[in-house]
Image (cartoon, rainbow, N blue to C red; front, side, top):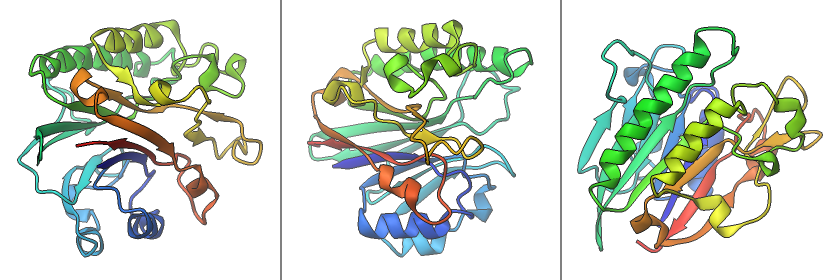
Length: 259
């Protein structure tokens, strides 16, 4: 089974690229971030025609996450618990039946946190604290659990072409990295690092012509519970999509599992 994540940076703007990729590659489950549309505005018909079931947690103009699946959803959870005042659409989770039982796939769009001197950085840290508590509860279920999406976290120097350029940025601040390590220390496995020592960049900034200079960073991750890590076979970064017409600034990352 292939399970992928992609920050699509506007599903309507990238609809052509999404349909092309789904038609050519066809992962069984695809998690999208930054769909930038309300639920009713999501382009369902064309995607459903390719054999996908769709669940969304949208928001007008910003954020928004979605899961596309060739399997039926057994259960759907929308929103990160712990703050009833938080209206940002950043988490959706689906549960699916597989031959070995069930798997839980949680798609997140973790806050960027910049500028650090604004309220956005404390929001990022508090969101991550809530996420740690949420993941603790999920791991207690002792089932295959895959937490994936745009984490807006550069885990280590190897994950940036020019790490010194990111010092002080919310994606690379010590407070952010401390919480990312706390997630891993709960027992999660970084899927890409489990199979590769290569940088595996997933994002190239439009503004700085990052793609043209391969000035990338790795901020899109798949983190796996022990039960999911045992089933991991490979991870593929689809960097070729960054060279397509009207691309997202992110590319899909796909995990291959023996479910």
